[in-house]
Image (tube, rainbow, N blue to C red; front, side, top):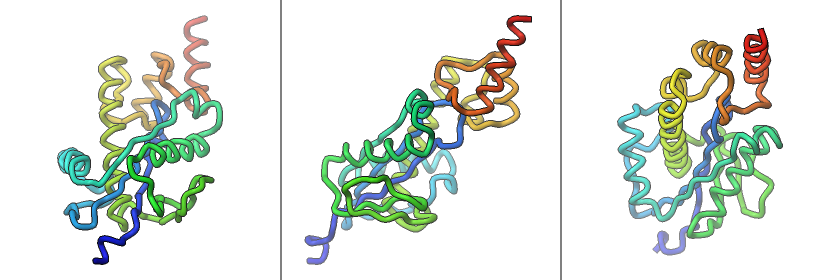
Amino acid sequence: MSQAVSALIAGVDEVGRGPLVGDVVTAAVILQPDRPIEGLTDSKALSEKRREALFDIIQTQALCWNVGRATPAEIDQMNILSATMLAMERAVEGLSHQPQHVLVDGNRCPNWSYSSEAVVKGDSRVAAISAASILAKVTRDREMQQLEQDYPGYGFAQHKGYPTKQHLQSLSELGPTPFHRLSFKPVQKALEAHRGVSNG
């Protein structure tokens, strides 16, 4: 009986605030109380193989789910925090069922009309947030693998766009792609250096 009146609770998480390239990707998931998914936890604590398997299970067994995003251009225009909040709003707004309450991983929620609360380390404490973290990470990782195909030489499949030594070196040598976040200082620095080399 309790399941029949249980609130529709959505979990929300993001991936991609720190990288220098690509969208910031968010996901919102409402799980079915009578169909628990075993093995849900913070996506970063799972192997790639396990994330991929859970990705398919979540999409099949969740009551509903949706992925939201903000582009590099939007990130450059409004800053990464605001863009992340926008991507979270898009993820929740695209759900086929409107949640009665939203649990957001981290320490802040978007300024929206939904009843919501932030949950620190929620991706390892709340199943719906764990599910959202897995959907967001697998989605973004796949996009980085595709970007590696489109722009070989940067190592996107390995570092997923984060500012590793390899990424920064290839940035300075090859220059930014159209998908790099131009407002991020390492990209600005690499762009200036690359222009200097080109002009020299």
